[in-house]
Amino acid sequence: MKKAAKLVPIALFAVPLSACDGAISKDDFISKLFPNVWDALATLLAFIVLLLVAFFFAYKPVKNLIKKRGDYVEGKIKDADEKEEKAKQDLLKSEQRIKDSNVEAMEIVEKAKQDALIEKERIANEAKLAREAEVKKAKEEIAQEIEASKDEVHKEIVSVALDASKKVLSREVNSKDNEKLIDDFIKDLDK
Image (cartoon, rainbow, N blue to C red; front, side):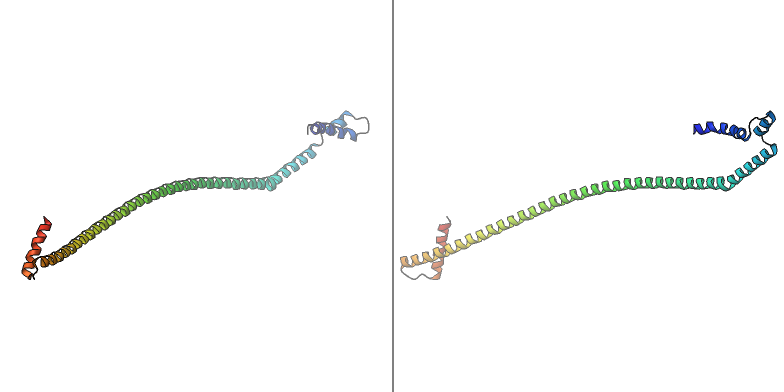
C-alpha cells in the first residue's frame, strides 16, 4: 500500500512527460502540468455531482441501513438482557420454591414422625389397657373358679358330713337337724 502511494506522484509526472517527443519547452511543460481551468472546473463539478449522487443514492441508504441494523442489534441485545434478567429472576424463584419445598417436606416428615409417636403411644396404651382388662378378667374368672370350687368342696364336705352323721347317729336325721349340723360344721371350718 505504501509502495503504491509512492508510485502515484511519479506516474502523474511521467504521463505528461511521456507524451512529449523529446525536448519540452517551459510553456509546454507548465501547460501540461496545469491543465485548462475550464476542464478542471468541469472535472471538479462532475466529481461533486458524483459525490452528491453517491451521497444520496449510496451513503444515505447505507447509513440508514446501518442505523436500522444497529437498532435491530441493539434491540436484540436489550431483549437478550431482559430475557437474561427474567431468567435470573425465574432461577431465583425456582431456587426459593425448592427451598420452600424442602422446608415443607421436612415439616411434613417431622409431623409424620410426631404423629407416628402419638399413634405408637396410643396403641401402647390401648394394648396396656387391653392387657389389664384381660388380667382383671382372668383374675375374676379365677376368683369365680375358686368360689365355685369352694362351693363344690363345701357341698362335698356337707355331703360327706351328712353321710358321716347318719352313720354316727344311725338314725335318720330330719331336715331341721340336718341344717343345724351343717351350719355348725361350716362354722368350724371357717375358724
